[in-house]
Length: 488
Image 1 (tube, rainbow, N blue to C red):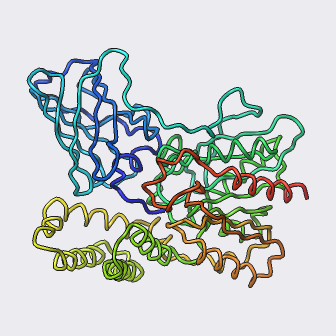
Image 2 (image 1 turned 45 degrees about the horizontal axis):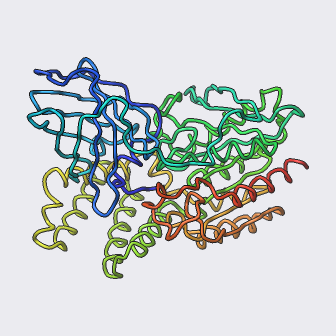
Image 3 (image 1 turned 180 degrees about the horizontal axis):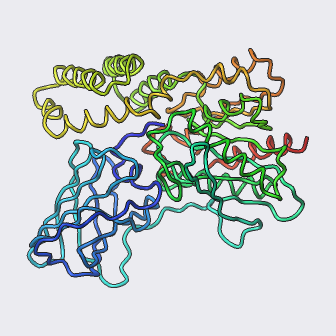
């Protein structure tokens, strides 16, 4: 689901394989090859986000953010001119305004540097220092649920084509012995996600796949289009295309000799909770069971409005501010529903920006001009005009849910601020009941957020700070339900 950019690089830079290094611009490079720098991005009200920078001949550079689970990633537009250093982290599938552009100036002694990070119209202070040999920057987050070898099951790479010929890549984990086994395809949420659904230093799908495979269910988890080993472009793919991708995974599983083709199901998280019933509603798909984790039961537009309201309220905004923000978002979503024309959508976005500027204080109005305004327009268009975004916003899951005849488990967290459990689970249950589905289990799990972590308030900013990746009781709930249905 939608996430705020100012978790800095954490939520924008940790998905998929590194972007390819572009041709580097070189001018009077004075940074020695092999230099290691430690840095920190100062984020108001948060612990500084630490990173490590490695310079190589070219110049070229890589950045790692251990706290967020980002391995060394190739940077683009790397330059070193005199004491000035610039470099850009380009998140996979992100609009240019979301690129993280660094500009720093080295001190005369060459051991420290200071500068700024510009991203989405915001500017954050950055500080850096040369690292001594063997010095480590930032402790990697503790993630005790991530599986460690030796593993009691087998894992192998998967590669297959979707209906339109796009190659998709993933990992299949299979229990040892006793096959053929039941299996599921995991379906990620919105945006370009890797096969582990990596987010905020967590790998929810890795943990879920490990748990299910240990309990006798084979699991296929797949890189979204344009991420990792998969081709294509997620933003250019609507929900129908994503359904075809999920069904291509099902078809590939049915070709595996250790998989029981009659017992193949789908597990969808967030937007994946719309894709799963869309796929299962097709009689020829022969889906055996589906699990919806924080899945929407209403349109994406309705989810977006409730999400904005909840996050602002829990974050401490007053009711008048919340109403103004929600009303403005409703106007933009109405424009998205009327047209896909970027010119018309741009007019709606600019009108909304002008309205916000008029409501702002004279000091705050600078946030709606210049580069910041350009970034708002660029991001607004990316959020309204792409096939992926329009399809999600306009699709009502209810008609598809009403056609689902296989067993359904739908779970939500009581502290989910992104897909509100009360509204969406009620809608899911009502739609399944209208269709006469005889095997439906719906439950709200207390104290869990959108990622099914035990949370304090459910805010997105908490995700990275929570040690648990996926609540163990929630994992048991999914595996117990699945194994019971798969045994039939």
